[in-house]
Amino acid sequence: EVRLQESGGGLVQPGGSLRLSCAASRFTFSTYDMSWVRQTPGKGLEWVSFISGSGGNTYYADSVKGRFTISRDNSKNTVFLQMNSLRAEDTALYYCAALKITSGGYGPESDWGQGTLVTVS
Amino acid sequence: DIVMTQSPDSLAVSLGERATINCKSSQSVLYSFNNKNFLAWYQQKSGQPPKLLIYWASIRESGVPDRFSGSESGTDFTLTISSLQAEDVAVYYCQQYYSGRTFGQGTKVEIK
Image (cartoon, rainbow over the protein chains, first blue to last red):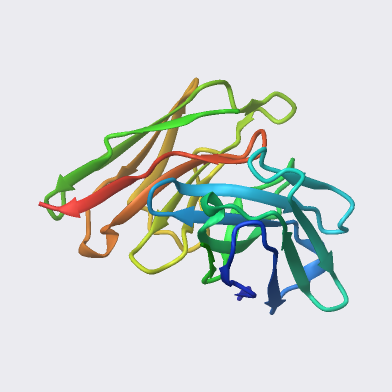
């Protein structure tokens, strides 16, 4: 069973920074592509960023491009989300998720953590 | 960006009856190299993260009850719960993973 545990959320002022971490266990971490997805009551689920298993490919939603950076340390089974220039609209519950390994293309998010709350105010 | 539009926003169904949720993508999410729609369905119960139910539009994830099924027609997708159970009360989301990822706005399913 895949286990994902997010940490690093909290209260930050607009313009500030936070670094989220997601520790993975019980699976071969380096073989899994990973995503960050956030959720707010008003906007629902919003994909934020993606990183391939090797870390060589990264993608971002337009809403965070240039402000957020995703990275991973496969030796520590951890994926990170560095969030800079935070705005009120970044307030959300942030989930990390592992993508399903499929026979073609990137799969959907199949395993999710419990999330970490980020409040920008 | 690909926009995913779900309908209805909410529905109330009697126990044992069928529930049908629709999702429409603003453009094709069909990947020509494998002829698969990059469309997934998730279930989210209160206070929990989303749970993957269906991928490739119609393939049930391991462990998902067979009362859940997905179908596709062009850019229109449907999630059907054939016989609603009390534990199916949740919000259901469609998601395209063809280009980035975008989710529908969610459909809340309740017991009538």
